[in-house]
Structures are given as structure tokens and as C-alpha cells.
Length: 62
Image (cartoon, rainbow, N blue to C red; front, side, top):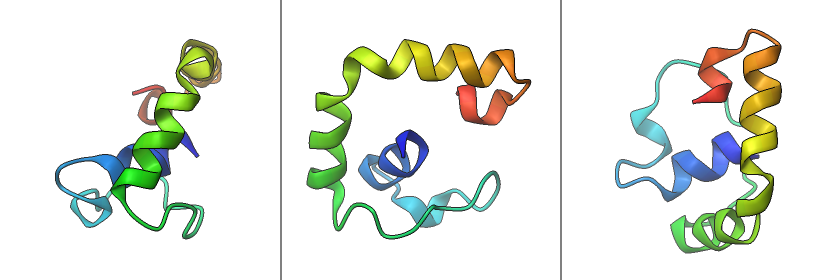
């Protein structure tokens, strides 16, 4: 969900990310919704990055 939200909320939009894991679906209808979700989940971000890095998934850790 973090990856999808980050792509949707980015200035470039999700279409600008042709590589890496594919989107999980239409979880966020627009960038404001994705941005609100990211803001609400800010406390969990370090745990998600650490877990992805520990599992050898650098693309997900970024």
C-alpha cells in the first residue's frame, strides 16, 4: 500500500513508474486520497522500510 500510495501521490503519477512491483489495485482514487493515507500512516513507515530492507527488497525499501 505504501508503494501504491507513493506512486499515486507523486507529481508524476503512477504511470511514471514502469518498473518495479505492479500496483495492488485501485486503492486510491486520486492523489489527495493517497496523500492523506500516507500522512496518517507516517509512524509505520520506518518499520515497513526496515522489513523490506531485511528481506532483500531494495525497491520496496525505497
